[in-house]
Image (tube, rainbow, N blue to C red; front, side, top):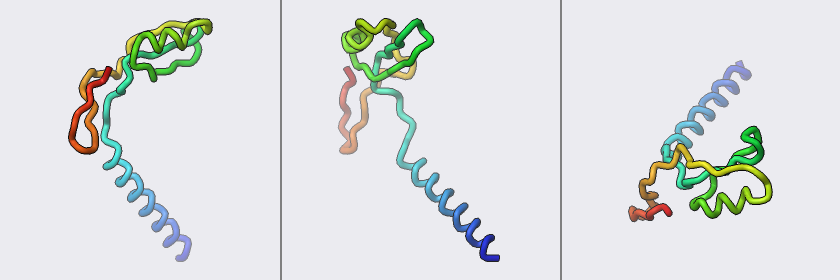
Amino acid sequence: MRAVVTILTNIAILIAAFAIDGRQNDTQAEPYRWCATYGAGFGSESCYFMTIEQCRASVSGLGGFCRPNNLYDGKPIAMEDGRARRRS
């Protein structure tokens, strides 16, 4: 009996945690426009560049290439106080 109560309590905690996390993390597009693919296309990838110049500097000397981020939508980033900030 005690094991059943413990299992049900753990399940309830997990459900509550997922519900809270789901409310706080609304789906948003990537704020970064460029991705760097290192190596010959089989290496690692980083999509944390706002400008092509940042991306090119990152792959310079390492090998690789820059490509547009497929998840970038160009929409302004909504801030907590309701203002909008333009993405570069």
